[in-house]
Length: 160
Image (cartoon, rainbow, N blue to C red; front, side, top):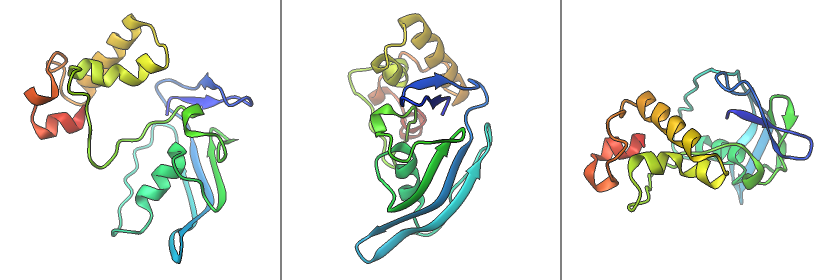
């Protein structure tokens, strides 16, 4: 995440290069009789890299879905830079999630696929191109911007 939410739930710039502090406080989420999250407490500092590891069904994906706003916890809080976003709808959060199986728009090249979210948010074209180039470089695909999904390997598609 590169921004936080204001009181009105609108994005406000955070430290662009450092990201945001994310906190899960006492998150609980059950699906029927199956408990996916049972009091999860976790803090991720800005710029920190974290891997969620564990067996199938232990709540890794559920925690990410709660952060993105695609799931709602039964109890607990999600804070971004100290602000409670637990009940903020997914479309009002400045968060993204890469799903376990990737999907790219086949009619868009890699650069356009990377920049799609920025386009939806109304970011100017020049800034979208610049940011997409930065991100493609970050994942080791600086020369692949003009390639379409069918022109890339599965691993390359996944990085896009």
